[in-house]
Image (cartoon, rainbow, N blue to C red; front, side, top):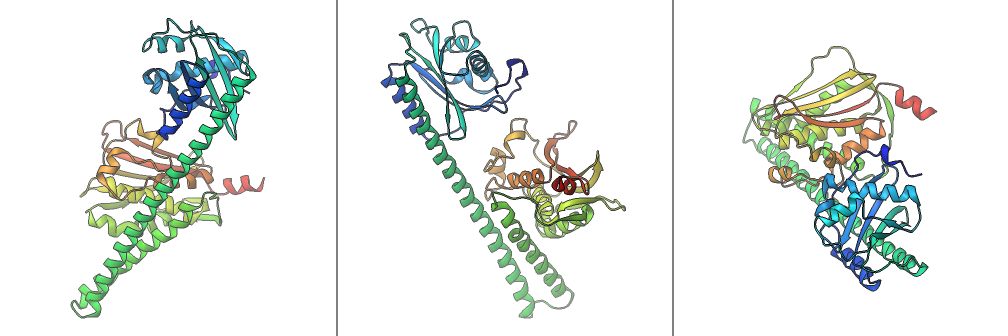
Length: 398
């Protein structure tokens, strides 16, 4: 059931980057049916939102960002009026006004063809504009269904290409990190085994090699969770959040020291128990810390601690870095997303780290957050909260 207009909440994204052939398919459909323009949307019924838009026949500018609300309202109105293909008056709508601001509509019919079409698991809406009276014959609807199915298949192909590209970058990043660690380990052990350094300095080099080995282990241990598309809590058990923090600091210490960053932990003396997949939670926390080391300010510090909060255990990583822009707060958790600053600061990123964190935390019934301090925007905090001990386990037993 479609939601009512007064219950709408903002849920709009800009048109995604798609294969240009998608626009060609829509334009060809318009020409074949002697139509002047068309808007194709993927309509998310659960969130009453538009996830995807392709426009032909007039500029896209009125429907980029928040002003796209007029298009969403028009779709809701049509669906509430008659949730099937029909002609709908558009002249007095905000949609018509938005288009009129960028295109001459004097020769267009005031009634548009509204065609909702399902394709696989997606719901599409096609809004058609014409200079002559639009026929709603079955032939037009069949033609519309075919073009929607074609575009749906093209979108699937585009999505697969994107995922493969991200995974390629991720594999390169993992390979680079492992190769660098192994090279550092060999260098340190060779210096000791060949007698170039001895005594206390040799012991220090062996300790550094051990830390590099643990860093390589961290990479390999996280790999399985990252590439698993159906990750769920595996070996759930009760564990102390402080121990996870201690191991994370040990694993990340070598990388932090390279940038002269001090890893600071909380001083809680009481255990902070939580129930879940301990290895996965440590992987999520480690990803936060590694990101803070990569993108934070060198010669500074990173605070890492956990605390109980409203029957939740909150893991917090706070560093000195670039402020988080509001536009990035939602997108940063998506598969393959990397901000412009991230690309400038660290070339070996793949955009899969925060996506993995979110996957792990959501499997535990928790939430992820990222924000800059209100007074000092350069104090950046990444956190995730998961339910306290036993809550997840009890939910699984129900």
